[in-house]
Figure 1 (cartoon, rainbow, N blue to C red):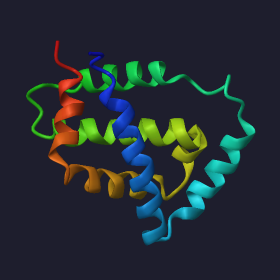
Figure 2 (cartoon, rainbow, N blue to C red; figure 1 turned 135 degrees about the horizontal axis):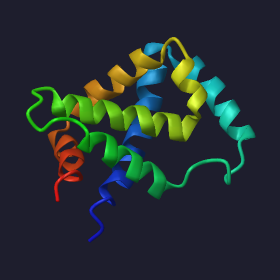
Figure 3 (cartoon, rainbow, N blue to C red; figure 1 turned 90 degrees about the vertical axis):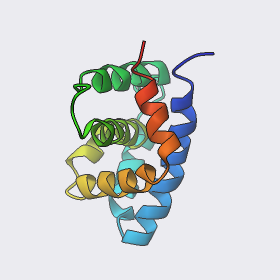
Figure 4 (cartoon, rainbow, N blue to C red; figure 1 turned 60 degrees about the vertical axis):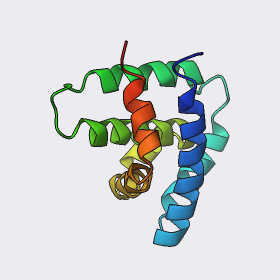
Length: 124
């Protein structure tokens, strides 16, 4: 089994959670602008899923195993990268991006299995 395959399911969950959270918290404007920008981007300009997986795993591996906030940081890195990948890097510059990331992270952290899957990806 490919150890990176859980990222695909988690990415889909994030897309659904982001849409729900954004609508509930009035943050859809940022995603709408990013979505419009993404529509202008061709598929060849967008990194492929394997490149994003590699980037996320590398970043998570960079978090010290002794860091008491390792799980939170791992989920945050994952969410930031998936949102930027799905909606365009311009979203990172939106003033509401940090709040959106934290809202999605908060929702995902209520799903311990998701956090464990992300952490498991970085183990040999």
